[in-house]
Each structure stands twice: as structure tokens, then as C-alpha cells.
Image 1: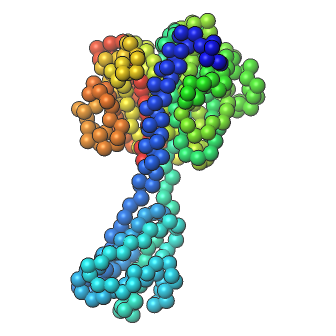
Image 2 (image 1 turned 45 degrees about the vertical axis):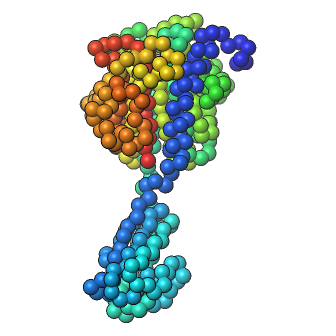
Image 3 (image 1 turned 135 degrees about the vertical axis):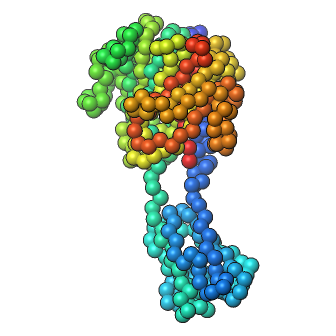
Length: 390
């Protein structure tokens, strides 16, 4: 699509896309700059009342650091090796208090060490280094919402973090939702994938018309032939998926993004969806699947802040609920400062407005939904976000 054929409504949607992605891009930069923040330092006392290391044996994870601190008394060393035979990996030299010595262990294994003057008296120790557990990954993200026209289409944003291309599948479901009791489903949805500048990457109306339709795994093809799908591979960055109705039709739709290779070096780090929140049952419902291991996330619901980006009808006071796969309520929040204020502030992702909502939670592998409503069934545009935390 060229800028010359962008009509007024399309220009407005592109503006909202860029606004939605602004927060996602800043979050991605923060995540990238905080890589390695999980590493810890373990302390060991050297000497003291007896020629010993306290504790003498420790277990850490790859990337962690051990810091030895000399206690007043005799001179000691921290020397890598066994039985007085140094292997050259690390050596503090013979020192006296006050003195500290540190070494970071990047690889797994068992690393013995000794005190040169006192190893014959049993002053030895070891560091056992195990692999750091892989963080849980977001393997699927989705949002269900009523799709309107012009600015009130369904805009789903997501960030691919890490390194290397990410194979993924996007789907826009409408007719299929009627099988699950959803009334007013969007009869014929279309799907667009856009980059961080709002540029169109690819679009699809009916999934079977895609050039690579047969490459979509059979169990992941949209159930209805009128529903769109996009199978592609994306480099790390920020993207949006937009669901509209053919000929400006309206109705409830579901936009989904599936990670087709959760073992790769790139992964979903954020989902954000902007849309019009109405009264029950047309509230905003965002879904996420955590796979492999537990993952700490922050879920946010923004409303008033959107006015700063040109949204004329933001949801004045959004509420937020987090549910498990069985629909059980895990946590709820109205104004973010009323619960977890310290933790949310420390995360760096506190909502800009006191009336906006946020929840921090460590999620075990499974399916979850975040529901955004307006206080007293108020109506307005809201943005729901799920960010992974280090």
C-alpha cells in the first residue's frame, strides 16, 4: 500500500498502530538492556576462627558469580585446582583481611579450589555450576473483541524478542466463534500484518487463497473457509495484526498469533491489543499460553493514557481480571496503586494514569485470559498488554 492511496480512516488506523507500537518498542528496548539481570552473586567467607571456607561447597547457575571475603586472621588464597595443584582458572594470590575476590562461572561443571598455605589442613572447597533453567515462553497470544469500522477495528500488537527469525501463524476467526456460543460473530474477517512503521507486510481474506496455504499445519488451519490466516517468519521487532470485516461489516472476532517454534532463539515478549470495550458480553478478552516453564508477566489495562495519543473516546476507568484455564479468578485490579504498587513500580512498567490497572503474576505453563471492562459498564477504547518480565 502506498501513502498516496491511504484514505482518511486508513491514516487514522495507521496512527493508532504507531501509537500502540510505541510502548511495545520501548518495552523491547528495556528487555534487551536488562538481559543477564537474573545472574546472582554467592558469598563465601575465607578463614576466621579456623582454616576453612564457609560454606565450603556451593551450587550456582551458569552466569552467577562467587565472591570470597577474607575474615580477620591468617593469610589465605582462593586457588582453582586440587591438592595444591593450581589449574590456572582463577587465583586470588595469598591475601589478608580485608580483601575480597570474585569469579564468574559462565559454564557448567564442578570447580574445586584450595587455599595454598592451608590445603593440607583441609581448607578446600568446590563450586558446582548447573545450567540456568530456560524461561517459560509465550507460545500463543490472542484477543477476542467486537470489530467495528474505521478506528474501531481490532488491532493486535506483538513484539518478537531474542535473535533470529520467528516462524509464526496469525489467524482471524469469526464464524467459528458461533460454535462456542458467541453471538454476533464477524461473518467474513480479513487480516493484515504490518510492521512497526505501519507498512503492510502481507494480508489475507480467506486462508485457502494464501499462496502457502498448504504449508499451514492441518490442525491449525482456520475451521471456516472465510477466515484468514498468515503463515510467515518475522525478524525480532514490533508488529501489528489488524482484523476488519469485509465491506465494513461488524461483529465479534478473535485475532491469534502462534509461535511455530518455541525452541528457537526468538520468542514473543509482548502482546498488546487496542479496541472498543463495551458492556458485557462485548468486553475485551486477551488470551495467552505459557509453555515449557513458569514465566513472570505484567498485565496492564490502559484507558486514559490513550487520550495523549489522539484517541477521542478512551475508557475512563478500566478494570482488569486474570483467569486460569478453568475460568478461575487468579487476580483482579481496578486502580493499579491499590495492589502490588511497589512491585509494579519496580518493574518499570507502571501505568501512567492512576485509574489504569495492572497485575504482576508468575504463570505456570498453561492457558490464561485477561479481561478488561469499564467500571459501571462504561464504554470506551482501551489497550490491554501482556509483557514478560526478567
